[in-house]
Image (cartoon, rainbow, N blue to C red):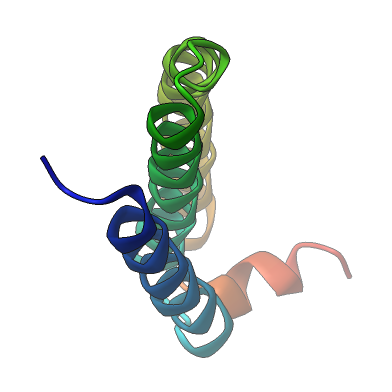
Length: 100
């Protein structure tokens, strides 16, 4: 079995990659994927902590977080589809223009 400290380190690395991707990309789908990567990294850290301490609360919270993440993706893609139908692009710069 894999040591939980390795899983926690992998979770931190994945979270950092997702955070950098969220800050540096302008494509809305890539940003949405990076946010999902950060959520999965947090779930991995919850599972690592649950495995380390022998508690099931981390597993339960991870199952709930996966369900919430699925709903978040559905809403995000619906917003992007609406943005594409009105602006003709899914660039985040086009989304910023909607404010004005």
